[in-house]
Image (tube, one colour):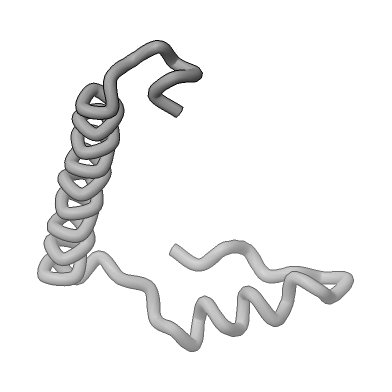
Length: 66
């Protein structure tokens, strides 16, 4: 890949690590945001979601739970 991109192997590794770190930081941010929602009670009951999913294959699907 380094030859194809005309870059050093070190440059390739730096780019890969930077992308991976950015992805991990975003994953952590989203996890903290989700945990905050749970702490604040902003959740949807599993049974409500399951009933909605089950209804999607019917002629009269339920509205998405809120």
